[in-house]
Length: 267
Image 1 (cartoon, rainbow, N blue to C red):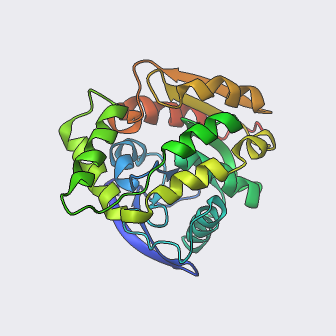
Image 2: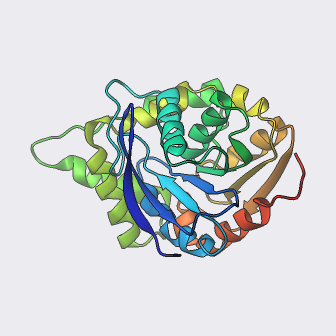
């Protein structure tokens, strides 16, 4: 089967909603981790392109999409442990692991908690940031406030539009709805990223790692520093790619993953 299917898996943290595609076989599956405040819906186009060659599993981060919110304030470790348990219960002991933006942080944290889970690691828009940059972004991270006039609705739309002036209305509508569904706790994922030792953990990753970003991605300035920190690294730039490169250039992203996630016997 190559169509995208949906389901839930029970974990000790609550139910995790996921999308999956492809047929299980002896090959290593691909696990895809999404950005904030999206869901696994952002991967559907990429999944259909990979499903003929891989089993693809894309869970929703806790508190987003259809996955239960954390019982307490979220941390990167909470996200990683929840999704790691979801993978284990789906009988995925090892994976080709891909994360975009927040998903990149979660992927690195998962590998830190369970070294060897990732046979190879691909990170799109890796949030490799200086302490000063994190503090600037932390100051800009605002929770949704449900005001009587509904101004928060247009605020969410404007914030998403500012990420990509050419994104379609349909894409922005999906992302706005997902942000509003996450509600007043959506900003916790951003706080988890700012509090995460992504830089330290990335430097300790032992497997081959691809870092990539679109030229117009908001995290493109982090790409070179992330690459420099890697023991076994490859870097890729995507011309004209934006924060929504996975949605807007699924062929490019799928081709990059297909080329990188190969069992050639290397580290």
